[in-house]
Length: 286
Image (tube, rainbow, N blue to C red):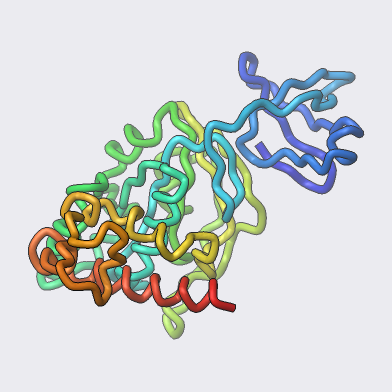
């Protein structure tokens, strides 16, 4: 549930009881370290304490934040206070695609939107809804909370999103027992103060777990190879019948991906791809 120093808080799968566990010495020798979300074998040695004996195979692993066995990413974003650029959404999405995790995109704080902004939201939903489930929410007006519960129920999820988008507020509404601190939003900078300082797995009252993680300040995509990037845009894969099999969809002739821009591929998504590709080329050439 949580890892701190050389101790781990472990929740028993059957009883729900929690133990603060030490690590076996061999873990340190082998350079093995449990991470939040790990399923472990442990032996209780006294009241509310024990020792981790083994770390079981991870079915999935996120690198940043480092969490194991996640079933899905729930990406929370906003069009207002703060307005999150589409390019930032795309960075989150390719990182989730990299580890083959399904993503739900939550558009929060819709109570703040005017009619023009709702039209903008509809256009954004059209871009993403074919490949990702989307949901509109408002913690203040209690909109979409039942649907969000259904999405999270009986799964291990990580709530992703930049600080200030209302992740903690949403969690407090659907599962008040988590009692997360809500950061103030800086009107000047339009970004929230980080209210979480460590990764932790939180039990939801209606079933399931959610990883509450430090605010994402820098979404590092440097581990993605430049020629791998095109495979992380699902709409590209559907239209990729390019003349050259190694086409990177930038300057090559006969590129069916470029031909699809403005129809089955949104211009904003292609612009993100080009920017990310050039960023990765520069990183890998150093």
